[in-house]
Image (cartoon, rainbow, N blue to C red; front, top):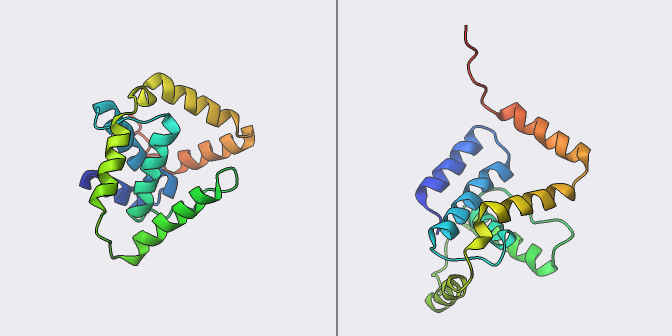
Length: 152
């Protein structure tokens, strides 16, 4: 369950017209924070990010399922998370399953959320994209970025 503050921050981003990936970034940030706090671990930065994206979808962020490059199971899971948020009703959580998941995550290491690991992940992710794609997303970010007031 994401913290209320995170959901509010994502909602504020939506009201400001920011992209779904920016809204989902709040949930990913929370997940990285949890790993650093020691609430649980993760095997890799990708896993921590995936958990955050899943929480975002369940909280109602309109994120599309990932395109090709991931397993069909992952795409199906993402679609299911999005559908769950739209249905409005929540099923009772399986206490056995959530305890097992928490136990498994607790056994994982904490270094997946280290600045070094995240930096390595960001560089690797950027390297997979074309320069025009990187430039376009930077331009999109600049459009919604709050500008500092000019001094006179």
